[in-house]
Length: 208
Image (spheres, helix red, strand yellow):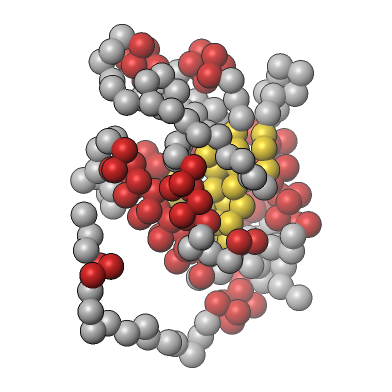
């Protein structure tokens, strides 16, 4: 694990082109849309749909997908609680950089522990961290099971699986909560529309 917090003799390098200039160039405001929820709750579906809608409006975004990141920057981490915490910390730091670059960063991760998500929120000005909770029933997520992970967890072949033998701590004050509508899941475009509306109303899609 990194020991950068113990480093000495390091200094922050200021640059003449800052976040404000980058945002003006892109005509949008950098932020982090953090999508959290159980496996199978629709996080990746929402992330891809939101990115596509933003692209169609000429807005630059980038998706940080939990599984994809474990192929690269986080490939040395497992799923023990301390590894999960480090996984989320790294993603939070990367997301912070994308937001500082003026992009709308869409982070899509289970991120089961509230303290880890709150630590990522604390990295940014509070208004620039938008927590989206995919509040879908475990039964629905398990019935989807596109990756077959719930089946393996139920059979005891995967240990520490969120929602089965490891807890998921629901957000207490998320900006957006997405649920079924009378037991029916909304289409991806409609889900993305909820987030787009929030971004529009909060002024992230233009620079005045």
